[in-house]
Length: 295
Image 1: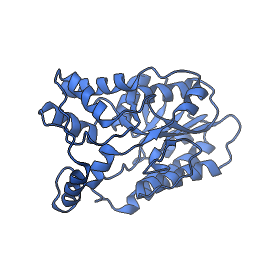
Image 2: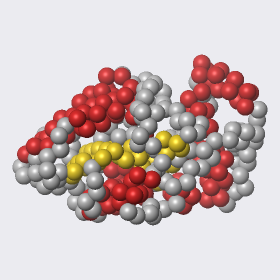
Image 3: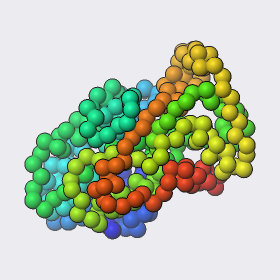
Image 4: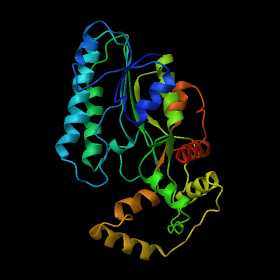
């Protein structure tokens, strides 16, 4: 399947273009509008965006310029073009930074960061526009995506396990949803091939996992025994607060990411495409861990 992809050189874009086997770069920094004004009927997959900045060093205006304004301009072009399908990669963070229970598509959005707010603004703009007959639009809200060339907390956790450093947060009993890049690519490809109803869809692997379980999966990929330390929760939180001021790796935000509950339902998308996901949560994490070792 050939598609026009923004952000084709990013983590998701590289994996998706390889999965599809054929894709064209819709470069938002160039004269991208020509691609849609010359009669192209290729579907559009909008991946490009300003990612959440863990260090909070970004100018807030950048989130709105990139995640909202550019999405708005691109979607307006899509509506006037011959392209039939538009897939916008939003985020679960457009809905909630903290999840009580299970996050579904019916959850009331309450984003707390510029990243989440800008993504929600883009979603709301898209949903307000009448969709011409013959066109389809899908807003996908992935949870934490991982796979080959993955960066971030999962990569950091892998390095700690590889060095034999004990995981000190085993006292936290949490469950969170993950999303393997294989499953995301499968869903996008299925939306391109099938006539699925337009709408908003959460994207997540089937089984939520605790961080303790993730550590075990990473250790297994390295043929190591997992080292889990259950330090007192009060002590860990105190150290994390100190780290907020003296720039240690385990600050409050990273602690929350590693130990929070964040369960996302994927029921709606699985019913829409009428298909199970090809990779289990554990298989996906194992694949990611094995890719780390091959670097």
